[in-house]
Amino acid sequence: MEQLAGFTLTPGGGPTLCRSQRRLRGRVRPGVAGDVPAIVRDCQVRGWSIHPVSGGKNWGLGSFLPDVDDAVLLDLSGLKAIGPLDREAATVRIEAGVTQIELHDWLQREAPELAFNVTGAGRDTSIVGNAMERGLGYAGSRADELFGCEVVLADGSVHQPDPAWFSTTGSLPAGPRIDALWSQGNFGIVTAAWFRLRRRQEVEAAVVVSGGLEDVFETVRTAYRCGALVQPVHMAGNSRAGRLSAGLLQQLWGRPVEEEEARRIFPLVQGHTAICALHGTRRLVAAALAEIKARAPRGVRVRSVT
Image (cartoon, rainbow, N blue to C red; front, side):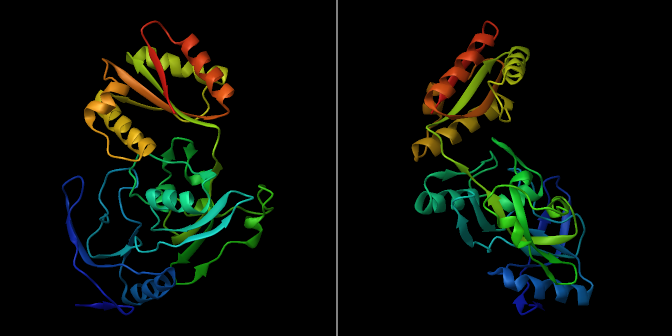
């Protein structure tokens, strides 16, 4: 087997999501971020292309294969370090291979008062990878929540973030903000970054709006206009809504959920379903929910799950 910076290249390749074929030069999976610069330098010397992935499925689906043949697949899923944690600023450093469920479990042990913006992409998907692809969670854009990126540049040098980023004041330092260069760009490989968390509220609820497409859309639009909704809303037909509801209940209950259980709480109705998060005090969430119901057209069902 061929060697690359002391690592053995393992075979890889096959069909992409679009059923096209891709031939890989090989796959390498470092266990620590410090191994990545040597891999990049060795590829530069040999003139090999690199395709970094954090685990794949950044949007819940897709292939980890590159768009060209004979590239080296740099698998960052082994970079699992979490910490340090800044409780005052509600931020934490995570490496590229850290998944949603891994950060969730870590926070449950180390800082149960804190939570983070989750996506519907799945529990085993990378947070950094999703943010680099400008993924959208139930509380907004992931790219806006990642900062202080640690990046291996094309020549193998390492860009370290300015220490001013780690101020607990919550404000950004003066000067250019270059973190936006890394998302959906080809300027470097992000091995770690700081991630903004949020403080858990008295009520953590999901609002579910069901009905005909036009009526559901009108309910969501008027709720945004009056300020009852401020978080992103996910809209879907019954098939996707059923999968989302089962996943949400599994997270809330901490156990597998049968399809019949999910349907008793989220009955499948003709039309579409919108799901949005509501966080806050009990009175604040109740008031927002009542406002949404009052503005919903006849025939639209508005429910909450806490």
